[in-house]
Image 1 (tube, rainbow, N blue to C red):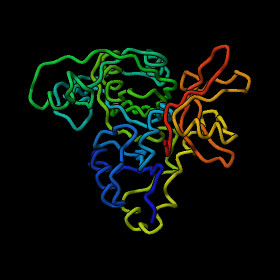
Image 2: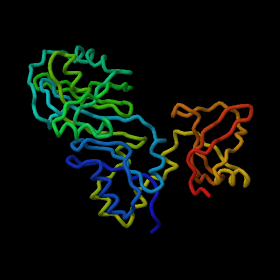
Image 3: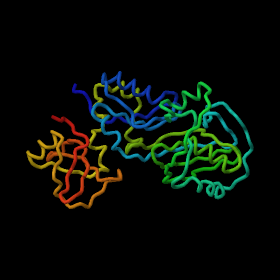
Image 4: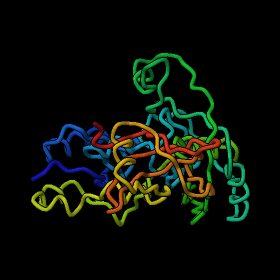
Amino acid sequence: MNAPNGFLVINKNPGCTSHDCVKRIRRILNVKKVGHTGTLDPEVTGVLPIAIGNATRFIQYLPQIKTYFGIIQLGIKTNTDDIHGEIINKKNWPILSFEELNQYLNNFRGLIKQVPPKVSSVHINGERAYKKSLRGELFEIPTREVNIFDLTLKKWEQKKGLLHIKVKCSSGTYIRALARDLGSKIGTEGCLFYLERTQASGFNKEHAIKIDEIIEHRENINSFIIPIIKSLNHIPSFVVKDIKDHYFWETGRKIIFRDPIDITSDLGQTTFKVIDNTNKLLGIGILEKGEINYIQPKLVLNAK
């Protein structure tokens, strides 16, 4: 069997790290080049896209929006900002109607400032924050700007202090931090009770498979691997049409862009997936505008 290239979308179980999942896939497929597209906390379940082979080179070009279903527990503060951490404080929560609680959530819709949890994978001076936290070091994590595109209150359990939410957000958003900050805004405490990622990097639960199922169907593994080109549907295409341009591309030289300039990808720049006449993926190119417009190679598969 040829070495696989593409994305395998894992439906992650609670209790294992994202790195654990990568190691298991590497061992199951006997492939060295394996990586995930974004960390899930150990107790978080759901969609974890795994890049295999050349797909690892395309992770940065995948959609950055992620979607979660979560449950927030009011009245409890922990050292990890989720229910699995050490309880630091407990505080009663006020009586709130569904509408009143929804008004509080308005503070967290759109572009917001957020400080990630100290027990997190954020890098601080070249080291993961959680490692510093485990050693009991005192440190601060800089505030970052994140975008919460949609925050929907699905259910409110007043007696238990549990609110069920759906969140659509930018990469780098911590739902644990959202839970903590919401509790503070209401005048109580807050932590994350449960979290499932339902969409990430353009993949959703319909694409996802349990690792045990992969082991069971190992002989048919290619049927579960999503080709790289299918993960790039959000990026416009540039077709290399003639032999000369094909040679220029393979040798890393820019190609004249002859089409009208009216396309901008959602990556915030004129980024194109480069294909040939048979729809075979050749790589990623960046549009250089000028008197003559060019496609500059950014990532070249099978470079010479």
